[in-house]
Image 1: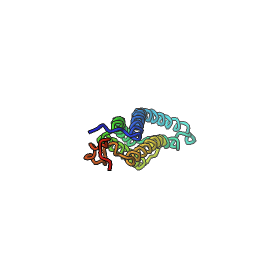
Image 2 (image 1 turned 30 degrees about the vertical axis):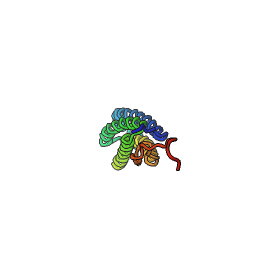
Image 3 (image 1 turned 60 degrees about the horizontal axis):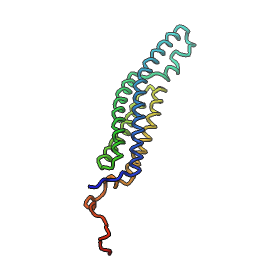
Image 4 (image 1 turned 135 degrees about the vertical axis):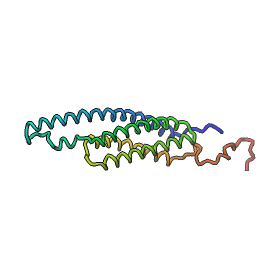
Length: 189
């Protein structure tokens, strides 16, 4: 079998996957740090409750919109931890899939397609879980904005992958025709 040449769209998608997977890993580290920030923020809000109890009902920190906007439930904290770990693993696989896509082989194309589908599926599950459970927080909604950007990139890359000519990856090609080449010695019809 001859070596297949990687198409330019395959190189572009592969490099994009490597870059976006690397950014996803950085975002995963941020989300792990986010859990520490949330714990500190919850302590501060509890201290504000003590201040508001001393200052009376006119305090801006009591059961106010401020407290509701920044509250993160225990469910959301656990959810963030679990899905950040899963997302971290998918980001590593995303980088591997991007690197594999730079080499034109059918199994590399299929691996990249599977990882993109997993990434989009994980994002959709996250949206439903985060928005489906009450207690919206500006912090949670902020995380979801980052996820929306990543999901949009995943969908765009998946569309390029699915709609482009896959023949250069050896997909949809009759392999029995591989050995045929036209030479000067062939009869002219």
